[in-house]
Length: 495
Image (cartoon, rainbow, N blue to C red; front, side, top):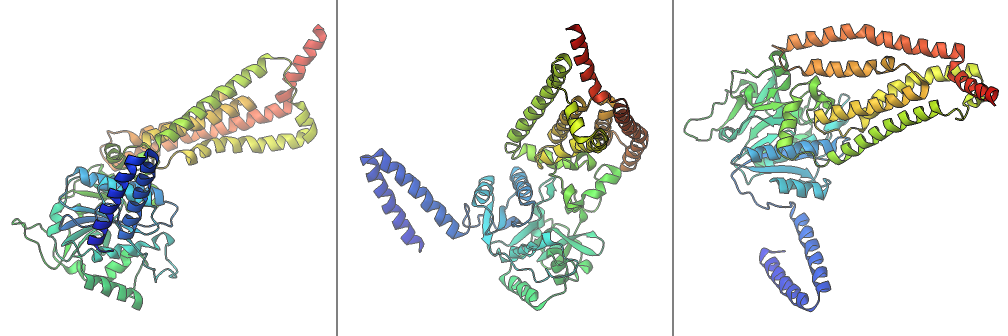
């Protein structure tokens, strides 16, 4: 539809709605509903929810695609990064290059966060049959769409795991392509500057079709192969007069500080360029938005600080509260049943289970079952904590959940308390050692964690031995059930 036709259509539509509104409140409600549906369909056809046209000559862009087990986590990470850039009051548009299968409500939320959402078709990855190809990068070549954003003079393309410490708008003064070398010989595509060009974009698509060599089969390998001489280019220094540079440049590493650089000195001290942006190119399961990444990796708390100051945790807190209530109630019920069971002599005799299974088989079964239950009490709560919740809330919920299940086990099988909760105490201690804020450097921190593990190991072994010895004693003496028979015999004598 042409814009003039849409304008006339909308005007007639509004006039019709006003007439209907005067006649009937019900018809007015129907009109409003239909008009909202019409607007949403029109937005989808236009390819974006909010900003249809660029409002700046520069843009920070990132991409989002579906098809991985961690789509939601990356959606949250993109939201935090977008809101962080908004908070820094950067003088540029914020663009999300989203595949068309990204949920519409996610796109709408990103628009509300301040981003311009551009929907694209997925680029088929011709390298997906390589022997060493990582399937999670199957659609990472969508990053090439950054060169198609020709409404802008310069675009800074970003991965979702970037943490901005300060505004970096001087990057828009860089040339046609600028990137950081985290690895001494391979450029890193977590952040790079480009000049959009339809010609370059089509040439890249042609290279995909003709099979340009790609070491990793992902966007980084392809871009590195396309700009294969970037290592020989000069270092970027922002011009003092504010003019844009031409050509290719290497960016100072301060624009993509690998989080691992921090852990040696436990501070940032990179002299070449501003210490502006942190990136987390480590193992996927240690990305900063996962609650368990801290205090294993201290910088995870920096990312969550930005989330707390931007989008908050409204989506995770209700689930965390519900789990907390469940764990507390479970522990209370387990303790109450144990008290009732110990004080009521008329409680059912559980010896029937032993008789039905045979004592030898029952003892073997229980000796295998109890260690499994103890291990499960530490594992099960881990998988139910919301993955992107704040680490302090995440670890608190995990420790509460494991303690609740341990209380059930202790009250069910009458196992000594200290022997069962030793691991729980050691987990808490390990967290405190790793999170201790006054280490002088990363080496001291690593040694402290190692010493703690060495000192804690004998206690862990001792608790395991004590649990198994307790079970052996119970089965040898038949004490697990004899106390119920003893109570019943005393009652019969009294009667």
